[in-house]
Image (tube, rainbow, N blue to C red; front, side, top):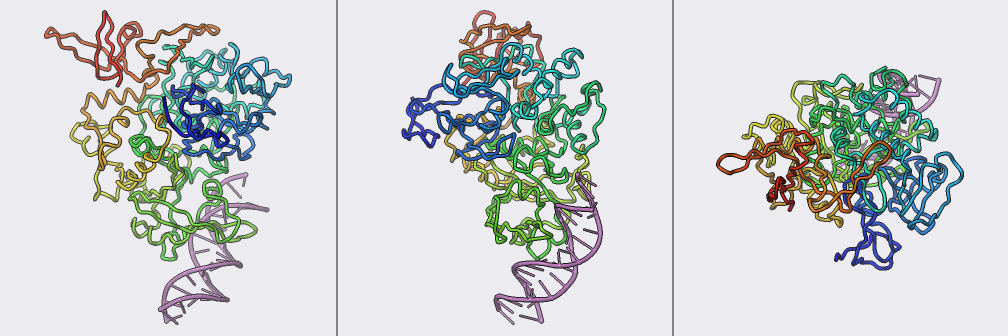
Length: 607
DNA sequence: ATATTGCATGCTTAC
DNA sequence: TAAGCATGCAATATG
């Protein structure tokens, strides 16, 4: 029994005492449906992509029309969301996607269309017949940018043809556009998530990395590909072995790829430009404004606190920006994409927090300029001075989701990176060996939550610690955000560390993690898909779809990690996180700390 | 006299 | 070539 506010504004119930299972989330849980109005608990639906805390309005993926972020506006007008995409009714109608609001009952009958033969919707969800499902999954794996190089050409052709089949593929593919922190995709059926089979999980790890590029892969990373493409330097990479131009990928899709790739499983420390994934001008932003922020930086900012920092754009401060005049010229495209629309030259006040936690109010306005506009932030001098920024330094505008608050980060010119710039961005000046992200740096004066890692000799995390410090300001900011969250069941970045270290006392704290644990956790991050284990008590039903077997579960999975167990002569057990063969791991599941051993199975119960 | 504001100009860059 | 943007500069406000 739960008591919570129904997020559907049209719901007269106000509080919903019971929640029905709703749409399965890719993260494994279920969106909840108000028992009165039947509306999906909007935040749950959108948590992965939009991290919306309140219902609101977003733009349609297809036509940029503003649409409601909730799934149901009225019985006959609701916005469709599935597979990480959102589209307005018009576009969905145009793309011939039939929608059914209640089980088996069609609201909008599909017109006769080839794609209709492959799709149907039940309970607001898109269903695919076997063939389409397979193709959908294959396409998704292309999106993942992982498996393609291993596929036989015939399979790739199959996918290509599938995409060709939907020559309105900009729509179709956009629907699958993964979110920044896209979690596991699952096909849906009968109110149950259909988890991909273990074998698939192994080959397609969780798409959670944020912009890493492959360090040693023969195949160019998706981000490399994407960025080459974004810079107009399409390469004949082996991604498709030259048979088909990559242009079959719509641009937004490639955007998405670039932020998903982590081919070697490491969370990249490369400072990779992150193309925007939302905002009205998302396809028009110059790469020089793409925020360059490492995975760790983002992970630390967002993961530890269960909030998501969405880097919007960055800008190198010009002399006039950093001067005493107090005006910071904003890139027009960024201003229009991410800041509130303004019709009057006077603009609107814009509240931001800097990474030290200081609150600032800038005037966001524009000047008429050659029949165009020139956007500026006025009143930035105090902030610039407080952060001791100079010309050449880089300010990074980010947004905290949920909540949508703006955060002003920075990176010093002297800290610009050497590792960045897999892309052709040119915004960084004065590169040196050092790199410091400042959500941070300057503030050695404040508590460094990562310092505890230093003694552990975890090079990976130490590096993160050295270069990235989470300011208490932003931490507090985020913590505030979190405390305001209604939907605590939102699945954010499922980092075990995060789960274990947040909100434990007023100070920024972090669980002291020893080497082995850190390694374990890192593997957890990399192969989080493997962690989507069924609850021990749950039996899977095996469903064969085409040639692929799927496990289906009634209940969402729990997070766990397969582990090897060494039985010592003393009788004690030790665990190691080595990779196991499927056969070995079949009988061993470690979910958390409490161990239960029965027969040849070792189950560690989750908390 | 100095600071601030609003606009214009011209260089740079993308298309 | 056009748009974007850094900055110059004149008009206006303030002390």
